[in-house]
Image (tube, rainbow, N blue to C red; front, side, top):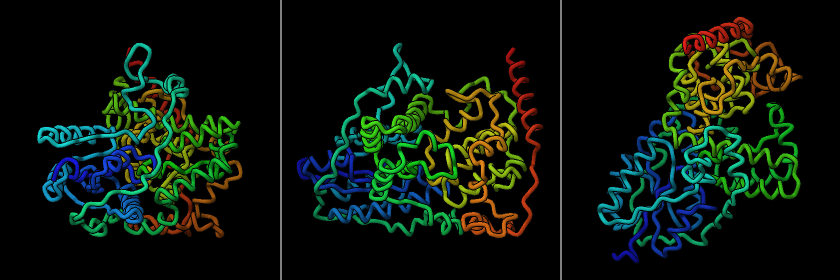
Length: 475
């Protein structure tokens, strides 16, 4: 084969869509055959139970979308470099294209692969698509990355965002397809066990569904978004974090939909765009500070007296703290695979402050249980709440779950939606928690609701004492 007819391997990762896909468009515009590939490598293997299961659902849906375009999704398992080299040998491909991803493991893997391919005289091209702005393209006036969200927002809000690319009319197919492994053989949902059946009732999988969710949101909800988004019982949010996580919709598509609404005077549109840029800021930070998902962003917190994992943290994980707002949040995650953003802040604050438990304990649990798990947003969110991170809330800002419930769930609708104990007429969402959790926990809705594991006033006082001790140690 010559470079003009040799196939391009299009390596899909977190970009399972056909619209606004720069790498896909470039491959199709080349006129060369395109072989779409997904590799179950060590980064996939390391994923938590819920996101790995949800990724499997996304792959199945995306494979069907490709089939509708006369193409296929080739599935291979193994070290990415080894898999790509084998496919190149099998197909005669002379190019590999992919969408950039920005966490430490992905960057190391991709850099190694790009260098190896280029050494062999092969084409290796990476493209944008996961973010609105490449992390190295947004700098402060004096150079270097932003460390605070507000000036980051001001720096990007008036930047032009390119219009989304159209879906290619056709994906050129090779004359011979390489063999593919079977998705079901990967058993990507094995770790979910019986919880998969429960969470499956609440997933929204695939590009077509994502575009529909966006359309419904901008048509019916965006006007009241700013006023209603903090109330977990109100269906006020877009829900698109799930789809963004797997690239089933691009941030540019979302940005332009929100921007049009803002230009038309929709009241909540600018705040919606700010939330999209909050995700951008998280990735900006993780790119420039790649240890953010495992180490205190503020080094002075290394000596802080957080506890490691403990029995109270286990009660938190199980949604059995005796604080209804916290428990409802944790149970929402068990039942739906997601958690309302306000509830995430309350649950995280309770763990790190009232229970004085290391934020990494919570980060790991969310990474295992959330179908919309995003490594950058998860890390920044936990460190923001804990006080150890960039743009952090002051440590002494300790969310009182009872006070937050009174303010944001005044009539108890959210708590009743997910807590069944003591309610003979508990809804299915509350009872589903007991169907989703491990049988070994021996839980039933007929049991009494647990007593609080810590008195809120005492927990707050303990956290403030620890904060003052850290300040004193700093001198």
